[in-house]
Image (tube, rainbow, N blue to C red; front, side, top):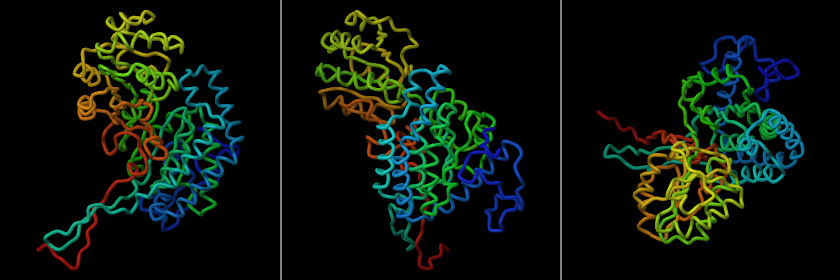
Length: 456
């Protein structure tokens, strides 16, 4: 278990202090009459979750102005502490390189001044968004005389489990605070120093505006026992969101006793339709595959209509070779791409997270739709077409969290879609589908206004 210099568990702004031996009488009912110093990993994680639960009660009623003040303070500290954050991140990156972390994960782990500035900007964009908490939708009067509506309320306590992405620490904290939720953050051990530096900015900002620092709790990384304990906290945690590789998502899904909102892999396709402009088609492929190949919205498979193959694929073959992209193509596509390697069946439906692209020539829209239905991961699917009818069919028939027409797959991102930031891209469809922003961190409860009506 990760301990600070004091020998006590790291994890929240108050984790450096001894856990209370006696619980005040106004503590929620899930506390026992007396809580002693926790000894086991499970007890320690449970205590951190209880503290977050207390903080959630405060945040639920916090006014928007106070939450926004906290977020402005977070953004200011991120900018003021950039040098310290980058120093911590440099240690993480160096250790990850020594450990042989794969390039895609290294890219996700690495911070620079531009990325820290982008994180701070995202926090400020969240400030500018309307607060969904308390909004009432669909207020109608029933024949009985009562008025019925549905009010947006926070989920409560959300656990976020993620790998190699230190920006998630700030993004998740900011979204959770604005939407009135407490959040338990369990980042990967490869980003532990970076996450601590970012969380310190958040905790200081919360203290400045007198909001509970336990609204954002860091669960120590590198301990599977602690993660198992976290996933078993039914009654204390309202939802858990895994964001990482296939192994992490499966582990969470298999061991969780709380609701899981899965953020699974991104097997993203682009279908270049008949009559598509060659230069623009190539630009979409390069943006989707080359700019940041290790992110979940990167392009992994290109489908090309047979009518466009002769115009698009030979030119694309040269461009991809110049960019260092390995092409794995099925037989018909290899007729136009002399540098391509033969594709295996396993290359379709695969998230490469590298400069590797699967390519296939299809007879038309029907075959493209069938391919996506078979190999897609419900993440991101794009069509490049001059046909309005085909574009509309693509939008209606493709099952994915984001479906695009004539745009790069890279646009499936919370910031690009106007959410300010995101917790990740949900592919499980329950409650949320696609990038999760403020509204996806709330649910709706029924509210009723009456004037003494009885049902009889």
